[in-house]
Image (cartoon, rainbow, N blue to C red):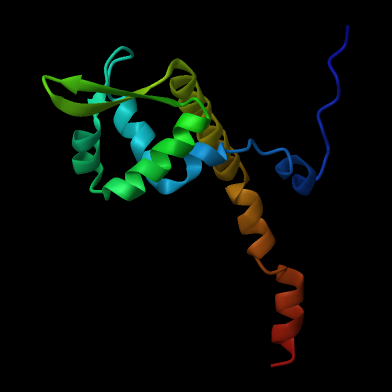
Length: 139
């Protein structure tokens, strides 16, 4: 069998097939939460106050973003008691860990496309030398 011919599609067509970034993780506060929880082992968890302190977020702001992550099944929230004191634990779920891995892979792919097409963009921004020479002749 012969190899298919190399694609001669214009750059615009190729650029429309960029990988999408997960909007649940992509929001900056949620990305920070996921990154912090990724640093833990797969069976580890962190208390809500420790996560809040680590991220320098208000309790209300952190709660809002954790709710979004929980709705996507990216984190698990466990409310329990330590002695007689209520404690809330937060952990990255298996699907959350996988979603973050997919997110970082998509981001890397976007950066590779950007690096690969950087020369193309430079060419597009470079003035046509024939036009410049013709314009300069009249000066």
